[in-house]
Length: 121
Image (cartoon, rainbow, N blue to C red; front, side):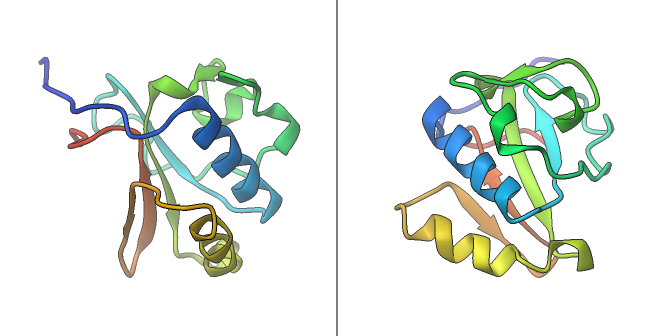
């Protein structure tokens, strides 16, 4: 089933800097890719990745999604659950908010960074 997706909200540089920062805080995440079906491993927590694995336009470590490396433009959203493993989540948020505005949705359960307007879940 095709769906309409809004305009991109994140550039390669923003994704790279944000993901490197999250990795430096040791944050675990969940990832959805453009074109994924809603049930695809989105609930799986991905362990922190070495900041060196975030290249100019690609995440070189396949563990981000449990599959092959991906381009930043393929990321629908990255979600950082508020779980005990992510004790540094609030410090991470303070760091990235100092950089400017990000397409961020925060709830009691998670913080989500969106790659596109109106992502289809």
